[in-house]
Length: 410
Image 1 (cartoon, helix red, strand yellow):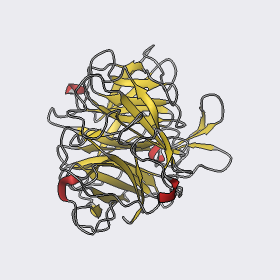
Image 2 (cartoon, rainbow, N blue to C red):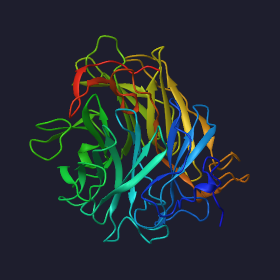
Image 3 (tube, one colour):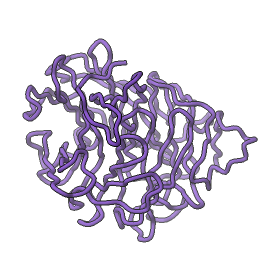
């Protein structure tokens, strides 16, 4: 078996990575501007439907590995994944910029058909970016029974909205009130094949590949983001029309145009075509297509950031085994077309010997990347609602309340 080499783990600490529910495995905080990526597998065996080890790897924007965080692989509070499930592991950043949140299964590595067997809890993991502490004690008994847990969003690293695919009573989007919770409340219908879930501008959005609802959906309720199903309406906003063969997963929404008080630009990955689609709106409700990037085989999940010069830089994973991160910068501005813009690869574990395992040989199909997020700093004196650089200033209260819209630029 290949053994991971964690340069930032102090061996003298004596902490068992495999069995601790709350742990600190890295002495170093995560650097603002770096990329965090969800890794499936440790290189010891080919990925399949059995439970695989989960790691969160930190890379610089140019693709240099900084450090690796390991989720517990066994014991009281493990967090593992279905090794070959490309629609899982959709990680995001909390909107206060202090935590990375991710999902998995409360099962030991090697558990067969982990996402379909009964009796396995669905788990939310929280990585504290300033301390490196990992918490996997949020283990849900009533979520996504017999099916996949896929994505998660959070305001503060304490309450969560999780997405997945299952029956009408415990699938769709579920609300989890706090770290350590064992049960969740349904927010939206579980009959849809949901992928990711995110908070942009203080509101809840998901992606789906189910029937006519394919694309980005706005999820609104009597309170926003909704914590139960009371008054909830789910509306597909992007694309205005979708082909039945389209499959959507990664999304990113932000305000690009100066003076707009609403999210005016959206990006969506079409997994079938392998393209990044761009959309814009002048009124916050009617969206217009602004072209698509050049195609990349197996394009999967997405994160991005609005730069100070008005360009938007994206990082995306692919569903190809081996672990790939691609990068693209859209310099066309609000309403401009990104047609033909090309991706460049900054990380490829099959060809790059400097991989998270510390090994000097490529690992082939034994590891893969899933979701990813850019780490953004918390603005001084204010809490920035900048989920994947989304845009809404908030004031502190029991629940964050919007006070105005801005663009997060770093």
